[in-house]
Image 1: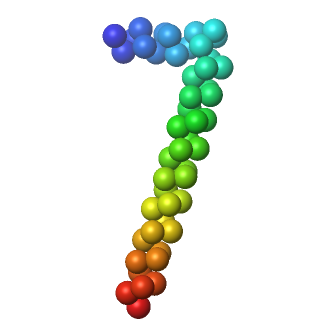
Image 2: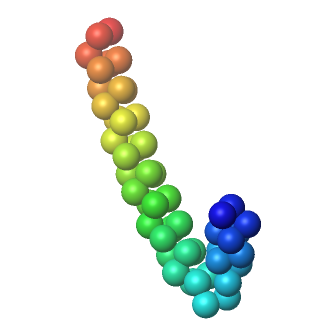
Length: 48
């Protein structure tokens, strides 16, 4: 199954879609990480 998965990921017809999905996931994770960092900083600042 893993070999088939890798083969499908290499399929030229899917490359654009896969890249767009990866881009969307990265953007979402960056937003969540930013929110978490701001939250932690606000908690640390409030504690000092």
